[in-house]
Length: 629
Image 1 (spheres, rainbow, N blue to C red):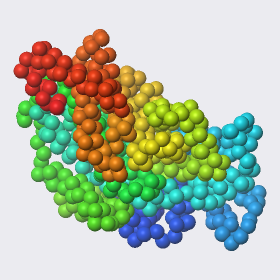
Image 2 (image 1 turned 135 degrees about the vertical axis):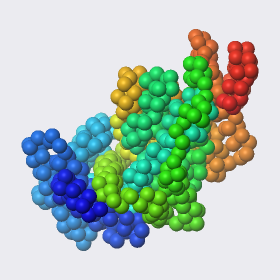
Image 3 (image 1 turned 180 degrees about the vertical axis):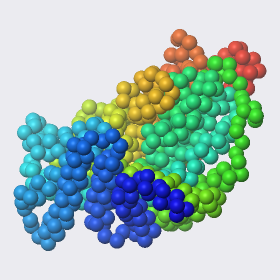
């Protein structure tokens, strides 16, 4: 092992030089989850600064990087370190009494924000950078705007005090939740990936779905849903599992466009699937005050419906192409080692649920889950200890993933600070209420549109936070329950990853599938269509969420029947042609309507669909329809 370690160190000198950065990040996350916050200011500012340095160091040491670009990266490292140092000095002055920012304070704060903006551009994209820049401009120049958009005014010093030198902006409560709770789950996901659990989940999924037509596509849905709940990133999930699933889906007879779309839709939905739901469930718990367990319980039935719809649509497409189920001989069997490796996924997840039911915090549950997964991984495959490169890559990947989410959430802090300081959120809510009036449906459409537009090119957590702060109060004012309003936003923020023209998950899947990105995004939108209807279903029938105050068994039954009918009707549209396709689509949307007579009219089309299946396919049609049910 020592010889392997020495050989690897000689081959990777850049990583050895940066090793303290990655190790400090991982150790800090581990310590905070297990033993609690030692100092909130140091934790938030220090972790953010370390995250910036890690991402810049990774960029600086990347092969093929020009010398002048590396020099720029080095300058950004110096800038963020100076800005963090100045923060601690100014923060102490602000804590002890009144303090007016001096020129060095302003320059250092601007330097820190410039570094944050550049990392936003590199790691997340221009969308979030543009939104943050508009927020800063509004804070500085909003007093010049006409009418209700104008605010009392802020000068540069006041804005920087709010955005940088306080716990209201970049280092706000949202960043605190990430550092104290979420980052341990990011490490957990990186560890599972290093242990090879992703491959085991894929093989298991193939075995479980071999009896279904189009089994490879079903397996991709199942595996992406399982792994996506931990990864918390649609694009990362597409890249991680898609390199295996997409070629296999194509090999089974589906087109490249359909294969890429299946992976994009399934990977995006992973953030909707309990128990972990990516990072957004923890943020939602902090924003709403609802316990994490209740949030995951509320999200369960809608998530099941989303994945059931994907299974149904794939079955419809497989039947249209004349596919048949694969036999046992077509599926690669799991080795004993792989079966044991699966325990490193199943046991920690079960432990998380048990610990949280017993009252442990999410961070504590993640802490013990990480330890359990590591111990099981080494016991099952002791050879891992002789692979320093693989173990170190887990540390590096975990630190980089944690750093990326820190940058995203810190950026959202700018928007939150400006909205709170200027009252912009209230103005938006008033504008929405003015446009929508008393119409809940119009308000929901406005919120859904806002989620899709802001979510394009933006990770789920920032998109969710921005939209819920802007539009959430307006929707809740119309009587929507708190949990329903927040899950509504999460669904559309997640599904923006498969919505053209900026469908990040679909565009990530397209090169792997060797298909046109826009066509893949359109097909993924078709596959995910039920995901766009489900939020309306649980707003109008909140009993679907199980934990709401107005829960009733009749309401739950109504929600189950109507949502199942919507899936079957839209599935009918997949195989229909012409006017029949339009009719089924309209009925599928109408069955979610809050008007009971519209629902009944839509439900009346189900027998038509059934008899058409029977007429066209005889016993085969009956069996297929029963499988859909």
